[in-house]
Image 1 (tube, rainbow, N blue to C red):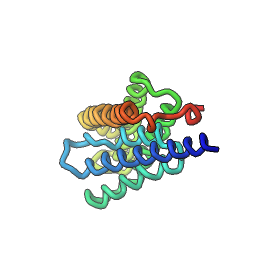
Image 2 (image 1 turned 135 degrees about the vertical axis):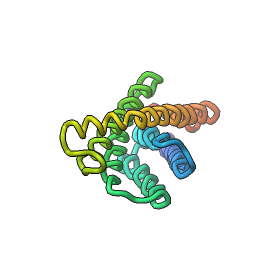
Image 3 (image 1 turned 180 degrees about the horizontal axis):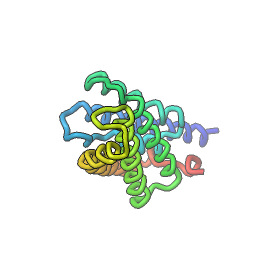
Image 4 (image 1 turned 45 degrees about the vertical axis):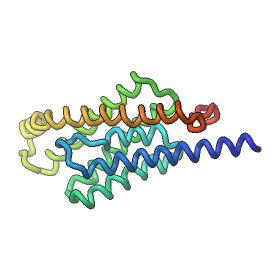
Length: 184
């Protein structure tokens, strides 16, 4: 029974640390930054990879995104943007059992690509600035390329900080390390 209590405490502290890291990353979104260079793609991956409760893993990033949008401003594409970040949380689930530099890199790239494809398609589909034909769709994607590089760079920088920060915390505070029970 004492070992199980230790597992619960470990899970509690890991979840608390992950939520604190996500909240900090969310706060950075309202700070001035280049277009699309935000922590949200990395934060969604991190949430999916670290937070064991799937409902919380999906809910907390969306809540953080919404709170930031209250300050930044609401727009018509928010449901699509939120859905895209939920896809990134799901991509983060792939990292749960084995986090390595290669897997985190691939997940970060996949998250940035799907965000680019989904949100630019929505801009075109909603009729925002581009005609609704194949030439308009192509023009929308071409115009979005500079934003894609910012998204990818932001996701890479923040994924490094989030996953690296957790790894450092686990190194200096062994009680935060993922237990063998959680990996099973």
